[in-house]
Image (cartoon, rainbow, N blue to C red; front, side, top):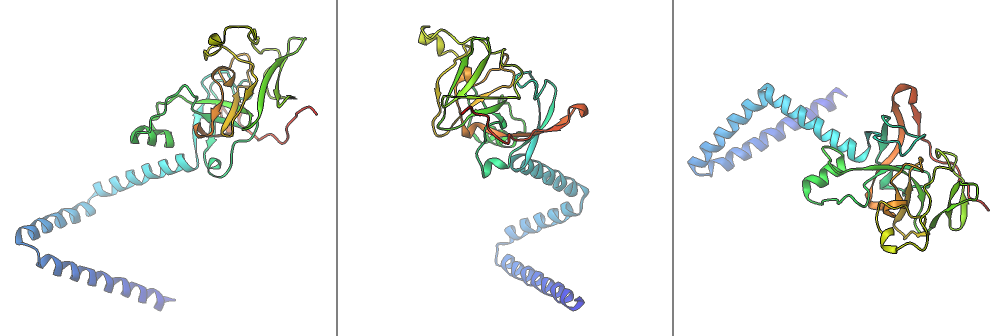
Length: 267
């Protein structure tokens, strides 16, 4: 084993000497002024590599690159600024958002997703795009809501005689045991109301909403206090950031945000 290691070291040493000899032969063929500039640069570079500054810079660059890779491919930490996802998430919760699953699967019904709403204009210039992809120094406003409607489905909110309201998916009532209350839905607007009035994203719509093959219907668990797809419409898949998987702060609120095991659609 030692002989193999020694042979490898000898091979690397011989290869290095060969490269240095080839480089010296190449420099000798250059004009004298060019050779002197190269020698000056090589001396500066040797001094730089031996200095503490080099170690600091390389460490900082390595850390920054690793943070970017982790935030883009693995996940990030976010905090909840409002009560739109109450009681599942409350104001002040710190959560972990995973970003890796978006590379190999689509969001599922019940997933709690972070995304950029349609009202946020996303710039594709290099710096804003890098900030958005990594979440570092990103100024774009992101929302967090639950996936209720999937591509190709028809979603509608219908009020019951007792004052409650339910989501209907393809004409079937969808039972949700995670929302704050079925009695806190805002009233649906009159169907005879001016269509121009309904175009405002400040007015709740009850549908029906027909989702295309790349759109999702997002809703907050606090149906009485959530700006979601009822107001601004469906959401394209490319606006998702990642899926919330864990509440880690405050400690008494720590919990895993499990995916739903089954869909409670009436038969």
